[in-house]
Image 1 (tube, rainbow, N blue to C red):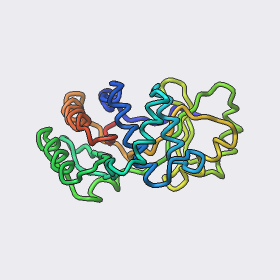
Image 2 (cartoon, rainbow, N blue to C red):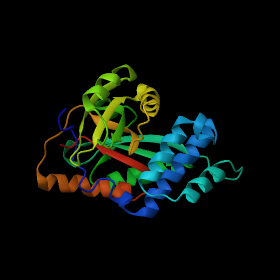
Image 3 (cartoon, rainbow, N blue to C red):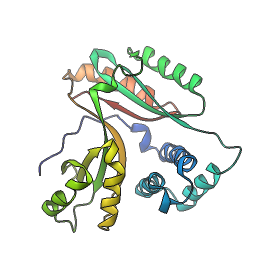
Image 4 (tube, rainbow, N blue to C red):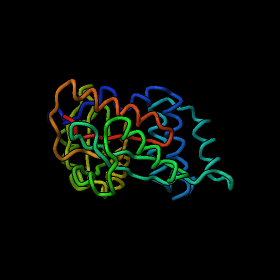
Length: 236
């Protein structure tokens, strides 16, 4: 088992270092999950995953419960997850995951961010083919027999297993196998530090440090938008 590939994230997700933004992102995810499959985490794997992620960023339990209750209200916003695709400067592909209750507002804002950052917002399908939509689980290595676990998770759709720079175990599976992998880990009594759906680049673009600063400036601009949940790129 070796070091798993990770793209540079020196400023990616900088907004999630601010607690209020983290909680806002999770609150929207809870709203989407509850609207889709109900408020019971035992019968809603998506909600169960989000609640675990909330715990990993120390979101208070009462805030999580309030978000679930609010999602059941008749007057709450209905959020839809919308993916936007485009290019940053120097040919770097960008995917922007949003949760929005007003797509007209969101697309206008995202297009403005791309334009001001020297990039171009593209059409659906213009960039996503450069990425693979994957389930990504982060586990603590303590108490795990890594070789046995790797073998046992093959039937659950395991595609790649390795460690990150912090020594955590990273498991990747296809988007379609996310629920199966989540169920397999739960069946083994393994609680993930976090579990996310991510867009992993199939190939990366090599650019200079100076050029990468231009890209990260655009990413930072996009991430500041309240409707933006995640940003992915294919910069090496």
